[in-house]
Image 1 (cartoon, rainbow over the protein chains, first blue to last red):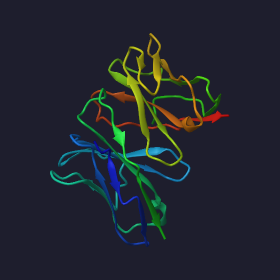
Image 2 (tube, rainbow over the protein chains, first blue to last red):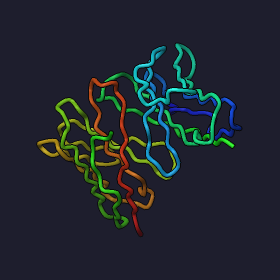
Image 3 (cartoon, rainbow over the protein chains, first blue to last red):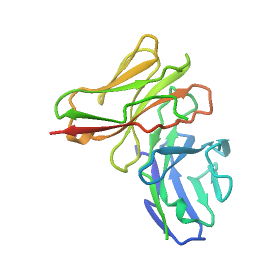
Length: 115
Length: 111
């Protein structure tokens, strides 16, 4: 039973390019969360999605960032026109259903470096 | 935005029990206490969670006070590989289901 899979593990982008980060949840999980961790800082919630729906995007920057979780395929976190400040580790987590009695499991993250 | 308070850092001797406290004095009746840890820069690892009763699994024990205003995570026999940042999180049952991480406790297990 594979865990949460994120790819790529490392991504280098030049300023102004687009970054696409993918997250495949655990089998049977239909809820996905994205977090960002800046160097030497804690995890910051970005967005919570269910299949085909964004439930809570209160942590997403207003511009350049978007997320989706289509009916088929992985969840995608998209960052347009990246800037150096976007350099961070991006983690996703998945859970089987809604409800705080259901644990969420994290992937190993994508480390984005903007040069 | 975290609803919990944890010590910034703790040390523990290898082989001894590590007791990590967490205060959540504003916890409400339908909120769960969760513990995760992050080893170096890896993805956070789920440890344990509970609502009212004490819980135990293969990794740790979770002791929740009767008034639920605080809890303690216990690693019964700490090893060097348990060195990590430990996060105590309160999750609301019906509130968008997100988890807000605070600064956590940096546990260092020493030989």
